[in-house]
Length: 434
Image (cartoon, rainbow, N blue to C red; front, side, top):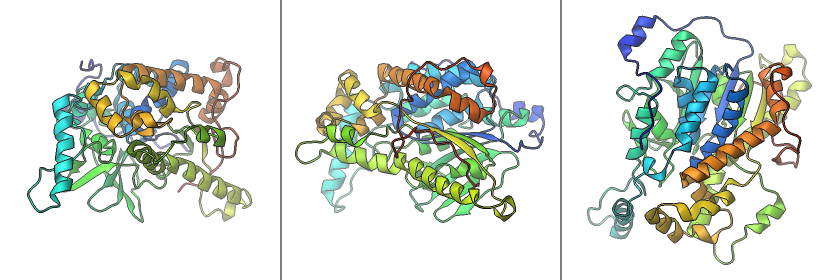
């Protein structure tokens, strides 16, 4: 089932009739939304956003950055023609109706052929010509789904330009990894932006296309890489050492970051011990978590240390560095453990493949959670995201600089997630722009 198009398709001629980009000066207190990766776990982000969209439908978020699954959500929000509440409601509908068949080909013949190509290429040793192997699954359905849901014109997401011209958006950034050079490449579209370049990472100004979103969401080995220009790109989380940096470079002074990683306690970690040698699914899950999801925690810790240093310096000795307030949200439950409850409902062929990788032999199947594009699982993540946002609404309202009276009080209860030090997982601190 294809998504219903609720965004009008805008051609280049339509945009030209609107006139040039909005040139009004930027606010000194710009808000950014930072959406991290995690495959199917990106539905959790939608639940949190839905809570905010329901309470603050006219919320203005001028800077939006995304990587992997977060890039899909970021591109949708940046291109939608309605207000924040309307954009989030449509995004909720798209995720709620998503099925594995709309993300990748899950039929027996497609999966068997892809696995066979990988096996033959490995066994050939390069001595005989072997079929090219780009990914374990074919993501052509996801491309078609995104092109239709984002009303792309010849691949370009023109709604982004529309929002830049009318002044509701300042910039959107999509992170990818170049398999050709090994660099982290951040694709940026916006107004009054200054590009940046650091060791092994750089920004490139462009008109965001579906190709950029597909590349950012291309899980290594599982999803095929995407060719942009003369280079091949994959999941942006691979080399993204500082997930908050694109938002800071784009001028954010307030940041709401949403992680999809559950921060388990030591006792909870012990519950997931696997007897005997760990199966491939366990190893791949740990690897993907360390590459895609742990980096935000490390970035936050670095910023906290810098904040403490800044606090000791008078303003005239801070070398132009500006304070940044931020809140980090994360799930109050282990999304991977939750995925195991829905595994029996996956398409039979895909379930057979994940079973062969040992997804049922681990108590916290992280790999399965990233690939679990199952409607009931996605709706459960959306509901959890809403609950967690309600629990921490006071902190979010304070960050947004909104009147607390405009938001109903959050239900009583303890904050659901823990930080690395056992405290609340939402870090709020002042940090210098990186």
